Length: 341
Image 1 (tube, rainbow, N blue to C red):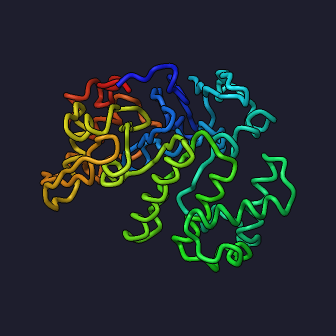
Image 2 (image 1 turned 45 degrees about the vertical axis):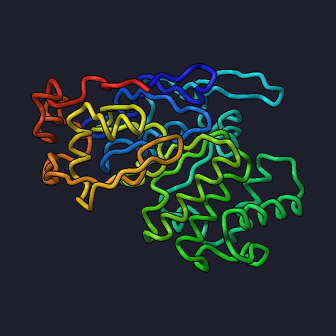
């Protein structure tokens, strides 16, 4: 599925983020291409270590050292107050410069996987949200606090005027994640990147958080980049899907294309790895597949084989990783995505 320039928010081309180590270079992200469209949800799916989170951190220029972007572009279609648009290559900005700091947290925000480690344990929830607001918006302390209380109320935290003075340890896992969502939305961003936002919560809370994010997306008109390894979450929430494998994009397309017409052997392997629980398929938001379940055969993926990119020669990584090496191409690595978004 091709996106028009009008609805393109971020266009990533040839992105490479590498980690030079004494043993060699780990190519965590090695030539990634995809587009994030306005007001839509893009799910990036793949096993742990395939480069999903590093791709997201590259967009915000918060890759941990010694990682660095060595090649490629991250073209952000930035809309100004007057309605004009400019295109900024985030990969070329100084990570610590004023322009990147203005974009990060205000126009593009992130919900991290584990809020207990992402939130400061020595500051109240309210202080952390109001600091974010005042950093990017010209509001007084009282105005920022009022906005923070309203945000906490909007994300479903009871008695927000009291809970705003709580520390993270005083909130349940689900409430902490809701507080993180409130912080991410505090400056009305164009894009929210959610890195496994439901991993640390139970199934009931997971469903509530996903429903909340869908409601907030409709209300605020933002795009969401959702990183997950859970194909049930993908089926529930995605408009578009990117399947990552060993730092590259194996396949990309609409959620219906990925679930009903997968082209890449790795995508098919992921789908077959879903535990069988029936075959009910319905249509949901924008007509996409909704809560798929599959009578899957045993996965092609061997957990005892290589699970993350490593300094091995490229023609060895895929062969260690996938039984379909001959189908995938030289060495089993994807030879470019089979479908364009």
